[in-house]
Structures are given as C-alpha cells and as structure tokens.
Image 1 (cartoon, each protein chain N blue to C red):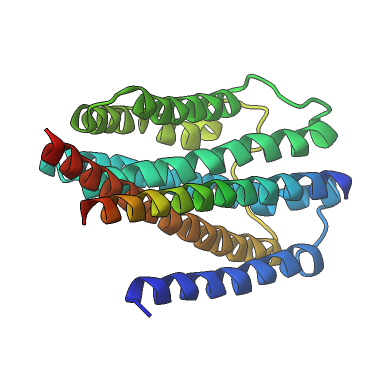
Image 2 (spheres, helix red, strand yellow):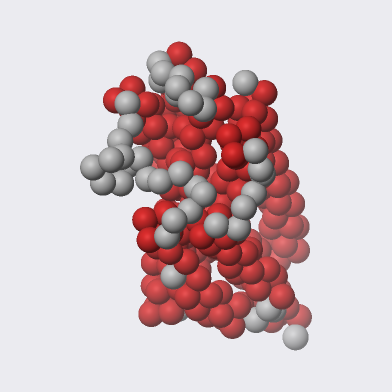
Length: 231
Length: 41
C-alpha cells in the first residue's frame, strides 16, 4: 500500500472517531443553553464549518502566491482543491446559519455586516471556480484564478472582524471576544472537539479533490502528447 | 430538535453529494486515462 493510501486511511479513521466523539459530546456532554435551548447545538457545527472554510481560503491565498512566483501547476491544483472544499463549507455555513436564525431571531436572514460579508465571500470563491471553467488556456486560467484567489482573500479578515467592528444581529464572539465573552467549559471542549472533527473532514475531502486534480493533469498531459504525435 | 436535525442533515447530504461527484469524475478520468494509454501503445 502506498504512503498516500495509508495517510488517507489514517485520516478517515481519525475522522470517524473524532466525528463520533463530537456528535456524542454535542448531545450528551454539552449542557443545553438556557435561552436558546436545543437549537443552540447547531453552533457546534456551524462555527467549525466557518473556521475551516477560512482555512480553505487561506490555503488558496498561500498557494496562489506560490503559483504566481513559481508557475508550478501543483500549487494551482492545491489552490483549486482548497477553494472547492472552502466553497462547500461556506455553503453549509450559509445553510446552517439561517436554520439556527429562524427559531432564535424569528427571521431566516438579515443583511447585517457578518452575514452580508459571508455571502460576498461565497460569491467571490464561486466566481473563482466559475472563472476556471470559462478559460481554456491552462496557464492563463491558473494565473487569473491565482489573482482572484489573492484579492478575494481580503474578505476573510473582514468576515472574521465584522462582529467586532460593527454592531450586528449575528451573536458577538464567544472565543477571544473580550472580558464579557466566554463559554461554559463543557461547551468549549465540545466546540474544540467539533473543530478538530471538521478539520479532519476538510483534510479528507481536500486530499480526495487534490487527487482528482492530479488525475486530470495526467489525462491532459497524455492527450497533449497524443495530439502532438498526430500533428 | 427538528431544526438541529435539519441543519445536520443538510451538512451530511452536501458532503455525500460532493463525494459522489468526486468519485464519478475520478472514475471517468480513470477510464479516459486507460483509453489514452492503450491508444498510445
């Protein structure tokens, strides 16, 4: 068995264990929040999904820089793989957020700074993925996508700091949010276990998506070789 | 509880669909790669 396969299996086993622990802790260990009740449990996957989406876009930012500096296609493959998983996670943040908001706020959505900037972030990276589909030249596609990946990253810190800089409908930060913030220790432990579980989920999806990109590169190279022989 | 399960189901349905899409594309690429390799020979 190749080292890559072993790493995949280890990630999958760790993901299974950590996700099971996270779900069990969410329902049987973390206390029920006094005001919101059971619906607050959504917090244990909404927040980790958001943090890991940020991680995905940070990888896009870093790999895009590396691609522009080296023009090595492996950096572009890493960037697009991270972008796709990041968009998936952001989509889920935008779905789970309103499902929490409806019973708590009475509305599905409001155009406050945090929600609007998250929606813009989703649109930016959706645009990044669409841009790649409409450009045929691989070098031009990768270079333009890298520029979008770098410029689009500006929105990530804006989303993160939105609830600190502006008054928003979205709840104020409970982690590193100042003296008035904080979580019950059992809630905090559950949140960290969930974050680890979703980090492993991100890793598992990213590795599979990256392998697809390498297979696509192999097919393209072989196709070019065949076309070169024919002409 | 309905809201929590709705959100949780949304997450896992989306992840499942993402994996199905990846594995279908992977399979199609493997078939294309095999065809190209045999044509090269």
